[in-house]
Amino acid sequence: MIRALTLALCLLALPAAGSETIVAGLSQSRVSITANFDGSEILIYGAVKRDAPEPEDAPMQVIVTVEGPSTPLTIRRKEKTAGIWINRSAVNVGSAPSFYAVATSGPLDKILSSTENLRHKVSLDQIISDVGITAQAENSDDFITALKRIRIADGSYRLDDNSVILKEQTLFRADVQLPANLTEGAYRVRILLTRDGKVVDSSEQRIFVHKEGLERFLFNMAKQQSFLYGLASLAMAVVAGWAASAGFRLLRR
Amino acid sequence: MQLYLPIAEVSINAFLLTGIGAIVGFLSGMFGVGGGFLITPLLLLIGVPPGIAVATGANQVVASSISGVLAQFRRKAVDVPMGLVLMSGGLVGSWIGSKVFAWMTALGQVDLFVQLSYVAFLGIIGTVMFIESARAIWRSKRPGSVPVRRAHTHGWMHGLPFKMKFRASGLYISVLPPIAVGTFVGFLGGIMGVGGGFILVPAMIYLLGMPTKVVIGTSLFQIIFVSGFTTVLYAVNTHTVDMLLALLLIVGGVIGAQVGAQVGLRLKAEQLRILLAILVLAVAIKIAFDLLFQPTELFSINIGRLP
Image 1 (tube, rainbow over the protein chains, first blue to last red):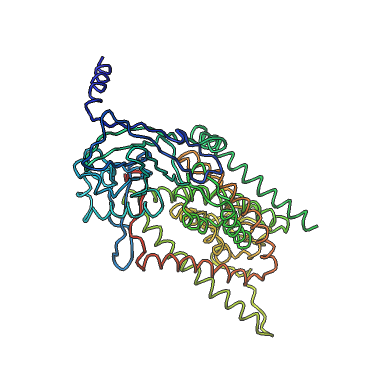
Image 2 (image 1 turned 90 degrees about the vertical axis):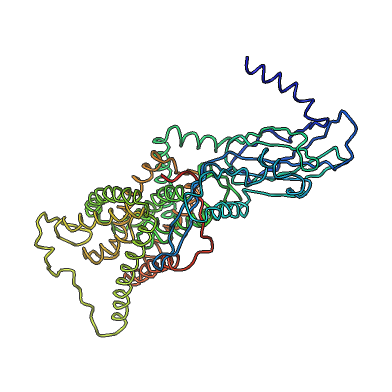
């Protein structure tokens, strides 16, 4: 009952949201991780449907985000104590995405106002939940800065301003590179249309990243039949050790 | 050729992994150390998560130790009774060690404790071995001086009860010192998360008076059981053994171990000892450097929450 009511409300609210709506698609809604998986590129494309002529005041802009599954994290900092460098302070981050990419058609701080950023949680700072970290360590902001720095360096977080191609204020496309060290799960893809820093319309879709074949088999076995898996690993080691020894003995004859 | 590892969830070049396996296997076959203290840092360096590096490393150590021990068996250089006695002590010691490890974890300074014990033990063992084997080499180069064989000096150890004949080592001693050595090494291994071969080898040479050539095979024999036990333990408790990663390391490791055993055969006992001393000292110095000098990245990210 409540669900039907919400749906009805949404349907009523939609036309009122604005005269511009997104029609979008993805090049693939599934990413399969197989043994030779070495990253993947997804294409997010679409067009803007208009009921009325295009407003003249400010140009339309497009923001595309791709967000991987989130996990809690611990960030540690080394400090010099009694002459040696050791892990001293640590900060627990409630949740941070394993992957996050923001692609835009213009500079993010120009095309999205800070209030809209707060509401829609677009920039990296909004996505990483840093509630309650100030009590955990001195200069706790440094820990979040370090998290961003390390993950941008290894390609897990990507900020690609001006990488969305927008044609005639109507057609758009964004290519997002997924790295090779991808984790499994549902990846949330959001498309936001903005005008003058305000979000005009948004659309959300999901990409499912899934292990397949040998990867799936080994992963399932390790989790579900761990004792058997341990014995199998051991058996593999014994056979390989023996085979190498026997092989070398034949070689030396 | 990039390969996606199912448990580690990273994509790494397959030949790089085989190469790392081969290097560690080579050292393992040559010196009779498991190589756990080398493979973990090497895997961390190429981006394998720590827990997976430790557990999968243990699996690789099983394979290269078997490969190496079979080569030693052919030369009758394995003292099986001695290996079993050491192992019985080792299992007790590693159980106590893992309890102390858990206690240190609760105190929150386990990393530091592990690193400091590495530096201390590797530093002391490396230095003592280096000096002793350098002296032996220097003595053998002077003509006319006959090296003194002290295999049959009778000390307080020979007064202990429960004497046993260790034929391959040419020893007739009480089982108490080997059990004590095994327990101590197992204890350190349990704390430091390694098999303890690099402590066991010098202990067998200097404390028990075993001949260097027999020590290598016997150490490998003992390591097979310890690291095999560790592998299954990790697979069941933490699910951190990556079979695909292990396979690549093993392929390199078993071949490396065979080559290492052949090279070891051509070297003199004191040459082997000085090389192992240099390796042990190098690892100790590396860890000491990490502690003393400012790292390039002060921050580290761990998935999950601190307890």
